[in-house]
Length: 482
Ligand code: ADP
Ligand code: GLC
Image (cartoon, helix red, strand yellow):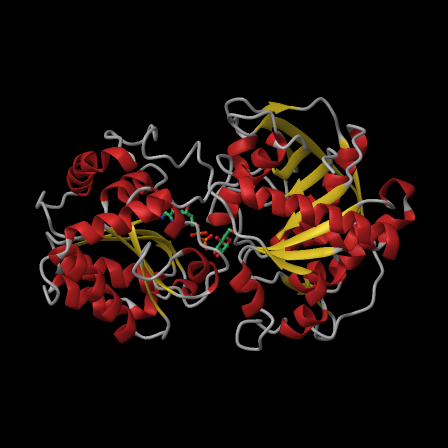
């Protein structure tokens, strides 16, 4: 069945408009892949300050949204644009007090901001008279839309046939707030076992109310059904296991291509890997490290969060830069928790001339690092999918990862990268030593590993088919189970 579906795609982040991590990459690329398959997919996201203050190609829509809430009707506006390089419409919900903020997250009223956004998205569909077949919501920020659709929304014939898919990108962030938010959303429901008295857990709500639930890799889908990986929601996830799927993320191959990436000064691909040497030199120059040839450049590009296994890194990096596996350089690009920012700044001061630390978010520097580094570190404690390792492979930087979640599904030890199981500094150091050894003594094998990674297919084409299948199951379930 190749029926075209109308898909209402709700997300807090979509590249290039808003991105904190991989959710932004997915929000900006999966809709394009769905559109290429012929679906009428439309992205709904909040208008953050950068949109309100004027974003090239984004226009204000001539309409006013009267959004009903428990605090009365709240007025909102909307902007409209498209995902670059596509015709996918993007609607930005604009509300001065709630959504016009400098950052995407981090405010005390986040649950209300995203509850409002979710509710207003429905109001917008009414005002443009567009009726979706499927609501596809991502992470807790859009979960209020799933709860509303499944409760209050069912009172309106317009929404009675809309099926829902909820995608978990990160179970660690659950969106906890007080029960008052349901008065605000004007909906009535019972509490879940996972919710303490008077508490709402939006992540749990998305899992509970959606017709179909998925996460972003098959391994993470299994891990979150265990007490160790379930962050308190494992029994709810086991309860829904027949409707729980794992679909690996893809990359936007228009954006992430070392042969055409406009942010690079030197281009290369599988057939011109020798050119990569220039990208390496350009990187060393850009970050102020000596342009030494033939020594491994290791890199980390990451949100500096406990999730990323940064607690393992201090000692191995110290050993590495003290030359215990031969000469090496190390580059960090990241921002987040102060303790990790401090750790990397201090290491960089100590290992001056061998290490460069960029504490901050720098979209233009990331591609230079993917293209110019030799090894890419991702020793995550848990990793729902991970895009960093896939981008690294595509750019010829060999990933060194802990075999968890999507990292276990995408990096094959000794074939496309190096992986280890035990969450310990020793196991990470062992993997770094294995990698640097092959780099130093066996350049042919190293090149094979690089090429295997570059030849792997991380495009969206297959995964987007997977989502199409989920939409159809969700629609069938809505039709037959109500
Ligand atoms: P997560 O979503 O958990 O942060 P992913 O690996 O899925 O992890 O996605 C991370 C994305 O964010 C990648 O595209 C990576 O290049 C990018 N990224 C992370 N930190 C930075 C930073 N400081 N500057 C630029 N890009 C970053
Ligand atoms: C989350 C996860 C990451 C995943 C991304 C996109 O941020 O931490 O592993 O790749 O979402 O799905």
